[in-house]
Picture 1 (cartoon, each protein chain N blue to C red):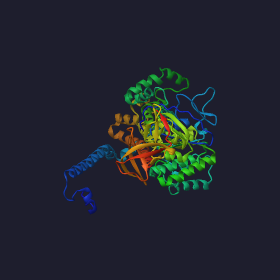
Picture 2: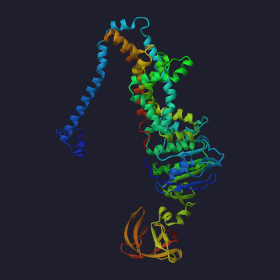
Picture 3: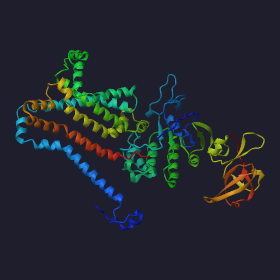
Picture 4: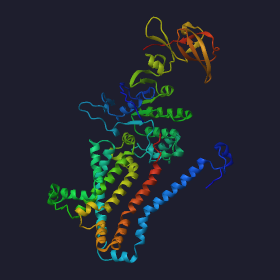
Length: 290
Length: 311
């Protein structure tokens, strides 16, 4: 694509239109290459979604999701994920904030502890959770006293989802809080805010885009949690388990409708959160430049 | 911003309503002093009190005031605005009771921010950001006003009005003010007391003109603009300090010390001339003259009441 430069610019740029320089050819070539690469990657990422839509017929969806009780796994997954997410926000937000402000002793060790579930295979997490909250474990015994059994219960499902998803929220929130200049919080305090007020009026709005991204990622992970879940919470059956079981029993055609259901249930929130936070980031961006 | 390690060790007291300007080169510890007075940095030793109440440091049986109860307003350099709030929201942030509409409008007007009331931080220039930061401090209920180069990015034409506004409001409140700056004229314009800080130490404190006319040490003299030092007779390590603006052409022994120097070079300096002079004892310095002799001329120079400084 060649746009003729306005005549007045010619002297300044020293480039004569119509005579491609070596630099210009290389620049144009690399732009084309980059655009092509971006398109390929984008299509490759979207490919599986296209395949999902292509292999689904209305008939097969109705057959799988029509019978009474067929949507139960969806409600189970939504409920457990929502509670797991609530617990993450409740416990993870203060933790992330204190980490970001360097107010925790042994911060590196604490961070490592948060990273650990990310580095471990989910199946192994599931096995270890049996020791922790299963009937043989100490904690499991205590739980049994308050009638919370840690294996194959709704509670176990929440715990397994929490383990797989919480690190994403805490790390995201950590980064979000770290991006807020602590000096502005001090300013708010000097101007009369209590620490909670300063948090609500200053820190939270500024960290919100990052928090939203972290929350959205955690939501997607919780909804899709499978490895640890299938070990400790085969029942009650959430969507990922349902997909696996349907696949075992009926093959691809039986599993795909549930896969669609999971994608539809898990994806909109993260997508919206991403779009919202991208918009907000750009609104505040550059404001801190001296 | 990367800062080298510097121990800042200063002590002074101010009466309520007093204004002090602290002058020093960048990196001398000025910002640290302000943050310490505001109680925002941990002190390794010593204490800060405002109206007798503990703000920073440790004292037996006392707990430091919460930031919100300190009634300290701080304008930082570089400015720290609330980037998600508008200019007006920033300025009114520290006002607890719902402010009289007219007062906010008037303040924004005097800060030159009326047309920007709805703009956010990202849209502002450096000078505009400083006006907002200053306005936010002035609108809050402060007893102590701490200013860190608050007008450095404001165009010179608007500085005077903003400085007067700052002084007016702090006098109205009976507030104590401390300004730190590396601009000597700015320091003198803000306050009638001047402290000179260098390398984390308060070297001299006194009247805004007194410190400049009677520096005690050679370092203070250098900082406040003295460029030449010639040995004073009768004592080792004692010098006459020569300020470029306090030299007359010719011999007038009753007004100061007369030296003989040769003019090395001359160039325009504002409405006057700046000349580099070589003194007989070997020292070189610059002076400002209205009508300089030609280069190469040897002439008598009267240094008006030069202070005698020691090392």
